[in-house]
Amino acid sequence: MSHSYGPSLSGRGAAALAAALTLAGAPAVAQAQEQRAQPAPPPMPGLYVASGATRYSTPGGAVRFVFDRTGRTALLQFEGDPEVHVLRAAQAAGGGLIYSSENANVMLRVTPQGSLTLYTRNLQTGAAATAEGDTDRLTPEAIAFADMQQRFRQLQAQARRRVGQTITFSVPANLPPAAAGVVLDAAERAAEGLAMAPMTNVRRVIITIGRRPAVALRGDQLFVQVAPQYGYAGRPSSSSIRNVVTGTVQGPQQ
Image (cartoon, rainbow, N blue to C red; front, top):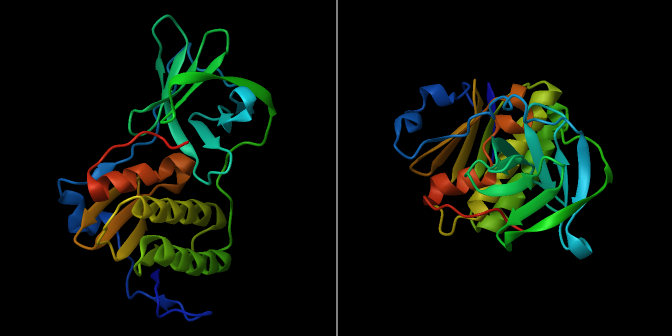
């Protein structure tokens, strides 16, 4: 059973779909524009330093962010940005690590001594980042299914304002709180990606549960597959959504 959220819904009048929709059964997966957001691979032996979640800032506090290396997947979140970026590590020339986004955009370099350099669209040559202190880990919130339904109605209204047209969301029913939090985050990233895609014709976002994250477009329907067991790494990023819808690639914001 899955739930759709659209303009005909109000209060508790959420309409249930007749049967759950699965990405594996959708013809969109076979389309050329499918993009799979693979979970980050295990860290390279001898390179990964589990130094916890730390808050950093560039000179003058121009950019602040949290860099979380407490788990097997490195995460980064800019201050004021709701999206958590999933990073992949690779060995850097001369030692240390290079951390890149899903789109292979370099976002961080960590030297063997632990110094960090941040790279964004506005900092293409890099800026040194200084640790400000430890902070909480970046983990998806656990949310009750009833609360998730209300959040989806709010997201529906926000998507209409940002995209300029009605977009309905279909999600699996009766998810446990941890999985519901990842699904909600996936929907928010989908709405963000669509807002970055000018003149999109997407009218419906269908979110399903699967073994790995994936996104595919067919006509006016966007199929988003989520693997909640991977946390943030189990859902496509907003950039992945935008890329599937528009076919363009851009660097990280900030």
